[in-house]
Amino acid sequence: MAPAPTPFDHAERRIWSGKAEPYARTYARLCAHPVAALLDAAEVGPGSRVLDVGCGSGTVSAAAVARGASVYAADAEPGMAEATRRAVPTADVRVAHLPELPYEDGTFDAAIGNFVLNHVGRPREALTELRRITRPGGRVAVTIWRSPGAPGQTLIGRAIQAAGLTRPDWLPALAPEDDFPRTPEGLAALLGAAELLGVECSEVAWEHRCDPDTWWEGAERGIGALGQVLNSRGVQGIAEARRAYDGLCAEFRTADGLLVLPHAALLAWGKA
Image 1: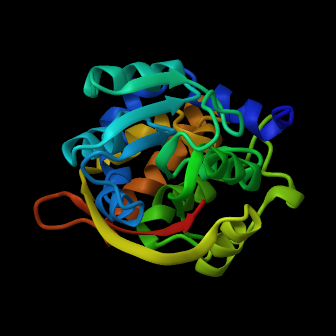
Image 2: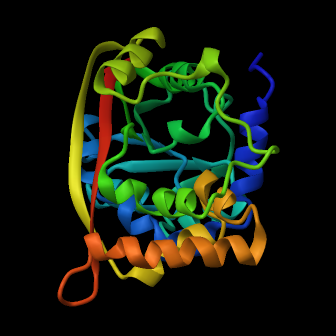
């Protein structure tokens, strides 16, 4: 029997409810950057039977279909699942939550989670579930955001801090016993604890180009924990943080007015 959802899980579902459309417009393109490397790590190719868990807007699913894979997808947020159905009509898409997925043992050649481990209350159990549904010798491949974050990742957080905004009481952090270092060593150890074999982990770094208003919009619309902190003091708090943000953007603004934001993620994979 799967463990009951944690307070962190409940908060994540509240945060992401109804956010499919603003996510697609703001942060989906950012999260798409590691997709090709993630599919390579999972050895996704023609005929592969693949699960894209935490499918979001369908970026990973679409890329896997383009490689000739047979794609299944799941997301805890119904709006995200529907967005993937529209983007990838051939995919079998379901609403489902980690660490309890509606698939039999050994169903897939590869299970992929692009930034999904950042959003589950029990990351090790989530990986154990991905291993369960992957055939022996198949691959589980995941990405997470590195911590400490690259300068582009911390831009809005710095503005929030300058405005004196703090995490609301209802928004819990991951329980200490479920947390892990967001480093190559920490993520590799987590995969090992889930009994994945031959684990490898590397860092992926890139520069994300985006206009300042679009980058701000995602947080202002309440996407992610950062967006909840930004909105924690209402319109006044948002306005104060926006003033700080406009000043900080000068560090990243190019001659054409766009921001060039350095980001860094971790990519890890192991065999079931």
